[in-house]
Image (cartoon, rainbow, N blue to C red; front, side):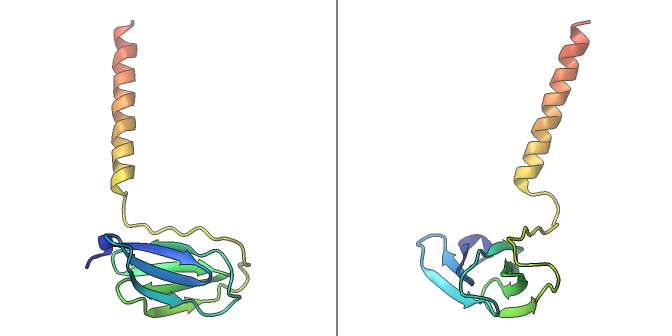
Length: 115
């Protein structure tokens, strides 16, 4: 399996990997600390999943769900967190930027032809 074969679910202090083709649970990991409830924010790269819940961030192995590290983020509070990885622009972002550039070029050409 590769990273594109999974769907990841974060709920009730757990991260679960599902097989995208049939919905089968591949692994589930309960995150340490905090209460049993709470929103779990997820992001991943091709090897790791980063999960944030109840004021803590955790790093898990994408393929096994093994907890690699945790950070209690002292002083950051317990609200819902946003996570972001910078691995360069996604295909969607690249396509959107190309479309915006094409639209701007077409608008410039149209404005130049109107004079």
